[in-house]
Image (cartoon, rainbow, N blue to C red):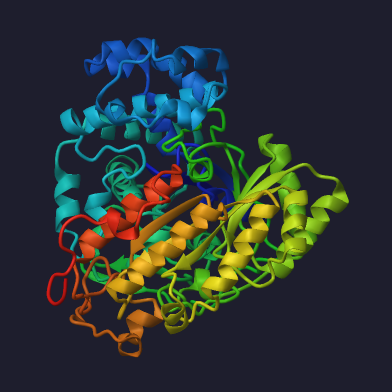
Length: 587
């Protein structure tokens, strides 16, 4: 059986999304022939080309685009001084609010400064395309607004029935090239985010119309969270099957059915007739994470990925700069109790670990294949015991690697442990401080305290490891004063130099979280129990506060953006909030 595994536009542009690499490694170990591709980076390669930009009337941009792309791919650093001195690039609206360049990069940071300016240049072009050519286009979140909070399929289908844009056609050209070269029996699309759904549907539409003999499968993170109560039959005009959770066994079983063998589908939706959506069940069947094959990167265009700098903050840039090899150390979360998290879903609830030797074996194989020694562990939370053993194994083998990943701010992160992490190659960690209120941390069963988090962050700092923290506002029963107190905690951590980067998001109640399934236990109440035919994830609750929650969110993000640039740390907290915050009672 020949499988073609594709990531539709768009995810990150600096490194491959890991789903297809994991599935390829497994399917090949079972004797299948597998190829893979990243339609996102291939599309960007076509859009950001001299030919395309001239064709849409951006001749000035076209004259330097090839030089810029070579620089962002690490192929020509000699162009950096010209970009940095602002003599090369046409400058659009994105350049109007530049940060203090000398403060951010000094006199020696020419390449970093050039990368930041080159990123603004690409974003200017994306803004033009979105305004003049394709309203869905974005460097990361392509057509995301169509898939986010989409209880019905109607709006998405209207977009799919509309005439294709030239961006759509470029994507389909990339798809057709893969299909003609490989001649697959099955094409599987990983849809990790809302911004990938439109691209997957457009590609499925083309295959169903032009290559109906090919089986089309959708899966990935978006399916896992939004389609667990799927009732919409029209989605199967664009695919044959939709799989949930880990895709190894579902994909293999579909292949066995296609070749005529008797097998039961695993965690798979399909349509029977015109309107019946059927779900196979067999939810408990999985491949042992500890023994499955290493991810396989062969077939991905590793030379085409580009390193961007959307912000000058060095920690924040890790997400968009550098071709990190993405890999999981363990499956699921060893804590899986946080009330806001989708702890009932398999990717969090089913915790499984390999040995440290297996983890490092996988790392060495990937290093040989990609030529890169940098790793981003994409675990929900790296388990401290296994992480310690992996560090010891890296040092025992004498490997030189760099890595970062998500952690919980455990007591386990002593100074000795953090020093070990640094010695083994850890450069950064990210972790959730969430609401930065001990009352609310206890309510949501986070399992950490503010004091514990601060102490762990001090140990990371003293070991030379950067820290990013995720933050949340608008959790049930959170008061305005608690929000101010949380920001003060964050400010003091920036001021002390124990965090370098942070991001606030507004709490969303999901149907897969404990707070969504038992809202009354957290001082909340569901206001709508309706099950939608298409997407079901975020649910309605009585999220009315006695203060302006939107204005509070803007103030939190404004303050933290400045803190990340070492600005305003001596300012009072309320300085970041404009206007009247109280919407009902009080001042």
